Length: 253
Ligand code: NDP
Image (cartoon, rainbow, N blue to C red):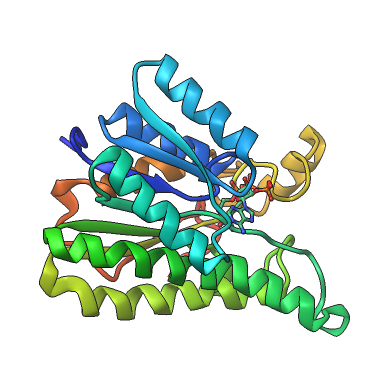
């Protein structure tokens, strides 16, 4: 089950060495997909693509700033040319900023909204044209528990707003493209052990944070990746407009 052989996937923001994107790229490749590893930073994307290839997978690296409208279209076109298709898009690129609204500048607001929400829109728009023409596609967005319950320890209100926008966008897009066989779903992770917060917390800090999580631990990038692989699969073909919480029980609704 969940075999992705013959599929081509694009994962944005996948060059971060300990990030959720690299775990998703590796997991999709392990299931047989050819993976376009994209990131704003070339070296990171190249490293992950090389590591996937040395463990027997198929991967190519691409430099992609998801906020650059023209670059998004160019890279999507290149992936289709290089790898033959684009079946799976994972909108993973994202940034956060711990700041209160009273201290937030318009530039702070715009930066966080643009990378998280506008980037998701731009990549989805470029991918769906091709997906609809082939009558198959899987779009999976990485939202956040912050977008559902309102702020967390590490994200400001702009991050919550952007991640909530992604959920609304995904639901509307899911209805729009469903007749052409394309599904659109989101995952909403709680706290995951990555470097997005500027460096991994000390063990003492992790214990402190874990006390407030019903499953008593911080989540792993691989646990997000497993759900993304499922949503990308043929077997998940009747699931669309859905969001999956991966948060150890820290937000149950
Ligand atoms: P990381 O910072 O490890 O990875 C994010 C990656 O996105 C980085 O490689 C970053 O590059 C890249 N990136 C930043 N801006 C852009 C851009 N404009 N275009 C393309 N790539 C860009 O974070 P995570 O792996 O933790 O986060 C992945 C996703 O998961 C994000 O959307 C995040 O909001 C979401 N998430 C994370 C949670 C967590 O607890 N870790 C919880 C809930 C959701 P660079 O490092 O150079 O900035």
